[in-house]
Image 1: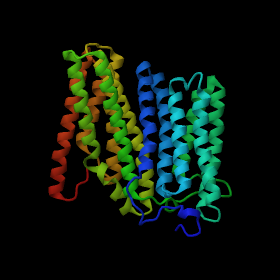
Image 2: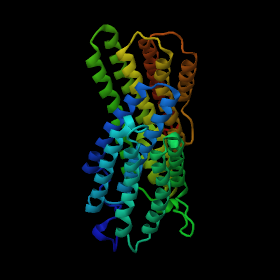
Image 3: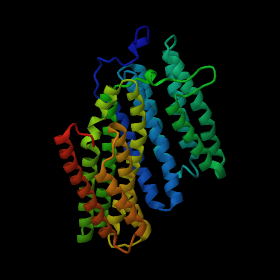
Image 4: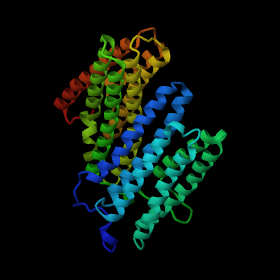
Length: 391
């Protein structure tokens, strides 16, 4: 497939399927990004604050997502793709650094870095793919990123319309990718043109989710270290650890480890599965970041009964379970009822609230996650006795 391309640019089916060291190095930028995002949400728990953080997270995720697919299509060991990864990493660090002031003094840094990452990728790939059919796909992608880039940069300069313009730009980027970047006179990319290596991409999703879990543990540990070691805070810190373990268990078993084989076995439709799985991982990572914020609030002020903070503690598991339920449905075409019931309970709990202290809400949240995880184990064993695991 790479015949005629400089440096053997395209990844071959026989190439190593494990993520390269450089790809893992690239992920380090997103530890910084997630810590910045969680801190911003902690500072403004309103719906408006959550919406702003969601916009920034979606933009940062899209940088990771597109770069992960690029390193799946192209060999990251080649000099050009190494340059591409380092370019995206530095741009991601700039975006992360600008998160606290992305809607004020440094909007242009955030938007400019986002646009530069995507157009810079095209500037590297289009000449290198000269004469190859994949050049046309890269041109389509570049055209649409240039158009959405106008909205990103306009939003940076026009503060009153910033949120609207950036939201529209994100809708363009996400929807056009799923549609194959349809372009007048250039057509659109088919799913067969976007062939991925399921094992590699599935591993990349697992790795970035581990990054999100690491941010949860890191921020909880920092907060606990700074807040003190009294009984209530120690309990809150222990609850956070058990929550992280439960979230990890719910993610992995079993669809989280079956995604790669599902992509490979599906053939060309598996490429669509890989794309949609990326969107659902954004939802799960948003939930994990929200769980991290709730853990920080609970550890810092365990006896507070503020309803906004209680809502954050409930919202994190709701987002995570929503993404996880849909991922299972995407892979196995069925729902995991323990997770669905748990999701409903979390939604009801978040709505009715109550005047529980945060550590009390944390006890209930952790207990529910443990029950869902254990029910998942029972359901999985029951299905295994009947046939192949499908939860």
